Amino acid sequence: MPAEPVYVPRMPPPPPALMTADELLHVRIPDKRVELVRGRLVVREPAGLRHGRVAMELARLLANYVDDRGMGRVYAAETGFTVARDPDTVRALDVAFIRRDRLPDPEPLGFPDLAPDLVVEVLSPGDRAGEILATVADWLSAGTRLVWVVDPLRRVARVYRQDGSETIVGAERALEGEEVLPGFACPLETIL
Image 1 (cartoon, rainbow, N blue to C red):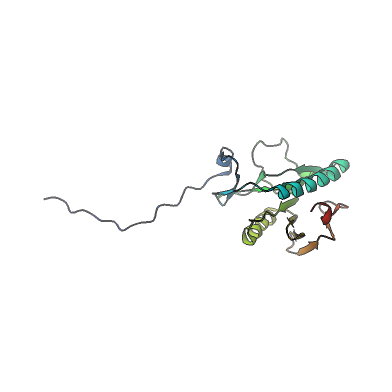
Image 2 (spheres, rainbow, N blue to C red):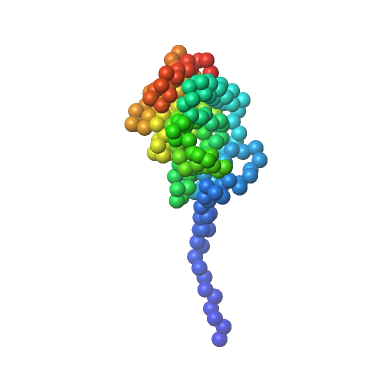
């Protein structure tokens, strides 16, 4: 006697496997920016021209200030940091500062398991507020003390601190290093 066919109700496909920070090191997607958020690959378009200029100007000013005082190191666009494990989250930023006493030695080839002291994110026109706030939360939760989110289109910056406070800086005011970079001040309009 032949067996009756067994029918299985339609099941959704299994979720994709989670990726690790080590696996992310080997991902190559030409002309795209990638991050890893809670084990899932996030692919974005490259940043635009204004974004690149604003990030570079601020990185240059920060690097000059930090180098002149021997305070640590400034890292440029798309440097990745592992800010959470299991599942892994690797965030890439526009500019970062790490104090000299916190610099990893030796400097890893991959994504370090540490949060910079200062993170700068420069908004692109397609960035969504919720995604930016999630990114800020990841940095602060990982131990970043100060996050600057610069919005060239609206000519403002938002300053987020680890204590939960937030400040809006208009173009006529300056981004200040506060306790993270004492004495540093950059008039916002000079980089916009």
